[in-house]
Length: 219
Image (cartoon, rainbow, N blue to C red; front, side, top):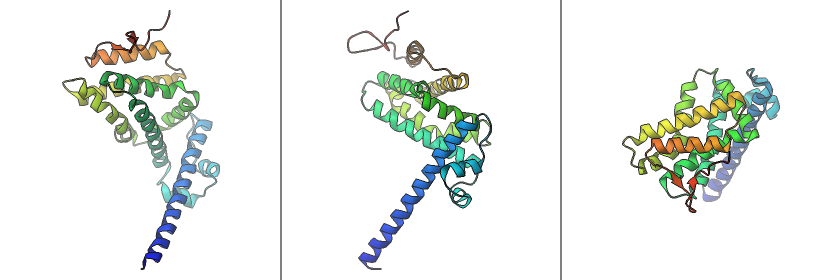
């Protein structure tokens, strides 16, 4: 093929790829919508396909089945949270503050009603799938990875295990909030941050003004 032919094929492939990306995104968004609507019942693939304006052929072109789709929804959600955390953490330097920002950013996901509703719907369905262990380990790994460097910088003797303990503790609080349809208030968040930093040997985190961080709530 000549250069013009190569360019034409490249444009066609790029367009087809973008169309596939858009179709997958519609299916994933529809899955969250349907899971939220029917929770705690399991969603039907046919309802998701209808909500996405797609077809059985298109659905099974991208996903092997409903469990595969639910894991893909979780993976998409994790990627969005990772991007949000990276943005927030880029504005901090001190390792203790980075850990605090990570914890606050994670808990912000259950403080937002829309995000909490979507997360709750997905978590209900995750309980029923065979690959739940995969979801907690492999798919959530990018969230753990954001903690690795700050925890190591604090001088923890076993930073990998310590980062995992912080991750598991915060994730457990998030899931408890989702299950009870509650959200952590500022005092809860402050306590969680303080507890984790003490466990990592970081002591009290202070704001530039010198007051304890996070700010203590008035009684």
